[in-house]
Length: 410
Ligand code: ASP
Ligand code: MG
Image (cartoon, rainbow, N blue to C red; front, top):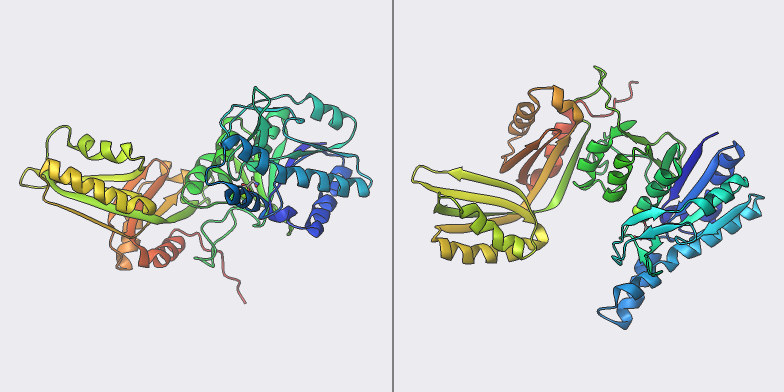
């Protein structure tokens, strides 16, 4: 007998039929003798609808009332799912965040869970019942309702699993696992059986938006085995674990992530002396613009070109700031482009294999794709290329690094 936390996302509980379907699933696990704690999202579209109502009243609703408002979505789902389970003869009981003992700090709309008092949930489990918890919400030290940020029900699921010492936290969603890359770009993308937390974090932050990043960090920190699987289709999904698979057949690269929301700016001909990098970047960070890659070249005449990438939304702003810095530093020129994208190969196998970068660059060269910037970490290599080459690059790399699903032989 195992203890599972099962989190169902908005699409999985998006209609009455779907809630009934979730109830069937939960009932069958429960009947196998497992202890089940369910965490649910609001029905799909509901959180956005509630935010829309608030914005109809005020441009700047207070964060406290926003949390009182948006937390209602999940309260609807826990009641409906509990009713559906009860109709099936299952002893189920709904718990709002505070009834489940979820204590958070006071940062409305992005609260962090500080502690979970599991005693009420334990009593229900000990009585043989199913626990149904509202995701996304908690209570701060002054009894104010808080929410955990968009997509926060994933974090609720993981935090409950950690606090209860669950055997696994299962995230049920509308995809059947984590893929080697976006299947819409590479039809030959494969579902991964396993991926490490580290890899998943690199992939999530690069746009594989299957899980809220914070929930993955949380699961890694508390060593909660996490599984992503489909609510609609049977299968093993993808297990996210601590263990690295060192078997020989295991590919060096686990997945390829990409991001289109990129822009690149360059300031040319600045003096190559101490303090210049900070003179360039301090005004950028003061404007709250996040910098991703940074490249600096020294040219023969003792000046340097300085390039960095930012989110596409910050492009115009970054250019303007850079122009005024260029005046101050007597730089030659400021240039930029937002027709770029970032492609990243991720894999813990890189640690023990040489030649990954050169193979990547060769692959891109063979496709005549120019690399505009490069960064590396222990388990990731990212390149910036023109956006029009995104599909071509990802497909070529996916195939060269042996990630393509095997074609069915006739
Ligand atoms: N309902 C919240 C949202 O839409 C939380 C969640 O679904 O995870 O962001
Ligand atoms: Mg979600």
